[in-house]
Image (cartoon, rainbow, N blue to C red; front, side, top):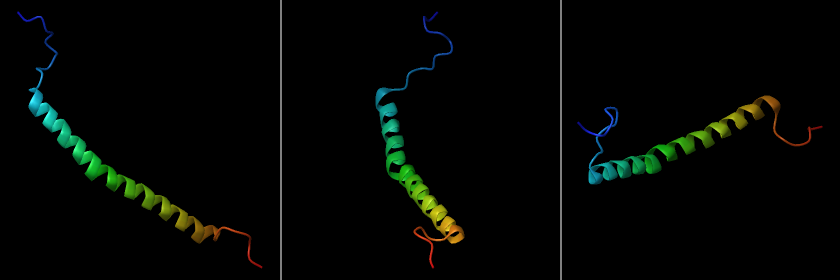
Length: 63
């Protein structure tokens, strides 16, 4: 009988787990997060643009 509990998963081989973790990091760092950043900045710009269409441009009111 093993001293480990039945709920513990078997540890993955070091090389395969490290390679998979690196692949996930690269996908996030150079794939997902740039797309998310562009979407957030673009969405904020769109919200400002729509607000200015309704409320008018910033600055003192025209005469």
